[in-house]
Image 1 (cartoon, rainbow, N blue to C red):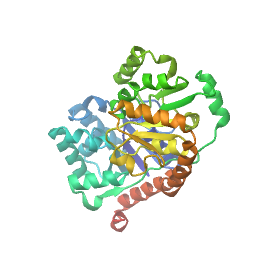
Image 2: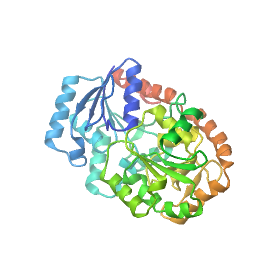
Image 3: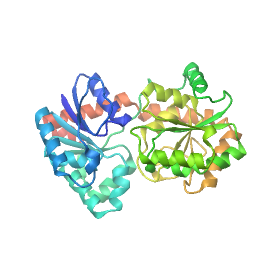
Image 4: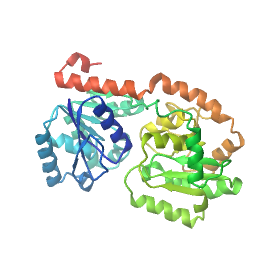
Length: 373
């Protein structure tokens, strides 16, 4: 197949999708704003980020021209807004759009214009996919999408994300100047406001008063944003930089697995969205998951059973749960026993990506029976 993605090439998830289908022998094209090269993938740079919610005629024209030149078998946009919008406006079919979470739970509820854009994109798609039951229910309730909405789990690469990497973790601690006996909390979802690092960083001084031998790692995830500068500036104001480490590049999957194995706690402080793949990766690498107490997290995490759930607007609650872990480090092992079974049962990347490949084939061949499942 010749597959054309419209997505953020700076996202580890986009890279993962492109590389998996490339390894399966498909020809992969990616329409994206500026990003690093992806070996084997033909990248077409278009400044979609400059006209993300309101269509720009030049961007629309450029994308239509690129798609016409590629002549793909399938067009797949990741995120309903921005990438999905331009995919829909291209008029190309078969067209799939995948909802990521913030594009459904966030902005469409705040703006009638953006909500209308989302509605038009979803109507134009031949198939819409989403990861979780919560997102599926929201999309059906809000947009009545019928059979063309499919719940397709992403899952994780368990061959890469698992417990282990002891030597690599020890070396990384030395490289980052973190003592062997120090606790580590990692924020792996990226430097964007939606991931709540501005809420988390305010809790760090109080944590350090209670337990000074703890370090905090913030991963950039994708492109640098003004928000990252705000977080760094605030860390300096709070005088916590000695215990904070910023990783300013996109990590390869194995590198991320080492960071997660090195860490004790992994955070996800979103107010809405989906159950991100990096949460599953953290859980399968043995991290205790500290997450916002929202419905999407409660689908897989039960407070004090296999995760720690907090009100992210309550700084004292965040402090309390991190100190609870430090006082009861044995929960790391008990949580992991539950989480590794959860991941093994339903969250295999290899199996789930294969179902997307089947979906592509059904669309290309117009196999209506397969599309009903």
